[in-house]
Image 1 (cartoon, rainbow, N blue to C red):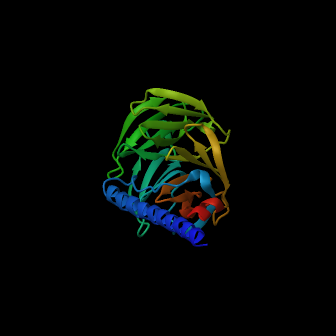
Image 2: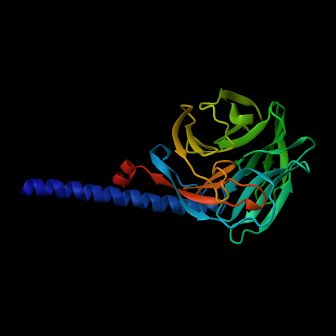
Length: 288
């Protein structure tokens, strides 16, 4: 009995030590995250085990923006700001908006439209800047890929593409773009050299995607899809609900920040951000 007790005590001690190490690692990563966030809004994105989540749970609903923000396209969140793109097809303007998270007041706005290139994409951050496609408002047309400073919203064209690019994601040095209805995915370097072109692994017309930890997190309607970039296959699909005004939560923009997922599903005066947390699987809960 004494030997058995010692063995069980040793096992429990070992499990307790492992738990402390995991929690210490999380604290350490969070501290590093906060330090790096002082240099860049994109760095403070805590790692999520995307293969081991069972769903999402609503955390908060932001107040509306207080004005007509037109037809929303993409979303990006930082600790201090809400960035999103939208198109006003009646005035032929494609906007990048920057709102203060503390009071939801407009901090800055920039019209990125150039001639017929009026349709802004879903967008992502990489290499110190946002990457946004401005496309002709028609499928199988053309796009200009912009690099935009998050602080000043100063923009410059990096390269052009002979297709309508509806979303941009950044994975390391790669710039990922999907065309109308996300039928094809392009992989470029930052100078626009085509590295690879892949057909959609799901056949779903995504509105916005974000790259994180080797995965693409994409939205379409009531679907939140997680795609393994290396294996190029769907590894998780989460059914998501509707906004307060009845639109599908994944209808427009999606963002990842601080281990949370954010949605911007509505247009016009109804637009507001919804914040969710990822719910880990039962098996993951048991391990923690």
